[in-house]
Image 1 (tube, rainbow, N blue to C red):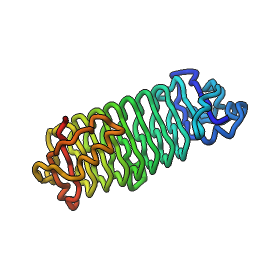
Image 2 (cartoon, one colour):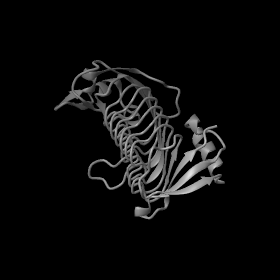
Image 3 (cartoon, rainbow, N blue to C red):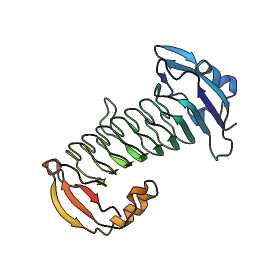
Image 4 (cartoon, helix red, strand yellow):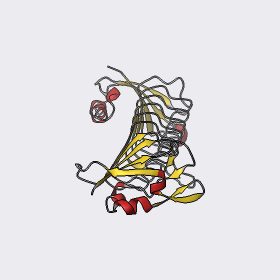
Length: 273
């Protein structure tokens, strides 16, 4: 058995820590063992079988697969420490989706809560809806944010997207809140819609790609003019495989900064074909 489907019994109630529920872990368990798996629900432990109905899932994939049906925002830590396989979430998720994810693929048909992709180092995370604050940002007590992998958000994202991003790509089909890419170390953030105040504030390196001219930038950014950069069509073609709004071959307006942090980052506002 390489695939399971779990269906949440009650949409409301105490939050459930889903960290133990991983495709590779469940693929090695029998149905009775899955039902007995202890999960933290609110302030006590409950067996998985009391919270979810389980049934055989997709058996056609190359690796272990897991689907979560009727999912709601009470489900935290989905895909935490995931290293392979496929996790498909039908509905919404709570906080810390894909926490420390190192491999595999997570897809969400709804939206996700705060701190998605915190500590992520690899794999692919796709959310059809919107994301909460601190997408790809450090968790409390951590020094750096996301350090690898790909995150694709279909809708909007909250404040502080990619804070202290070290590596990887975050692609957002809607807008983003305040301080997108704050203190960014490297990597790529692309936002189709409007960013809130302070995009790129204190960024050291990396690229923030915008599909909409920002209302204002931090004072540490210098207008570098209009460019048809040789690498830009290649970059757009590569990223457009995951986010169609990035397709095109036009140039970009470019700002360099943040000069207060060394000035080796860039914000590019693309021509939209």
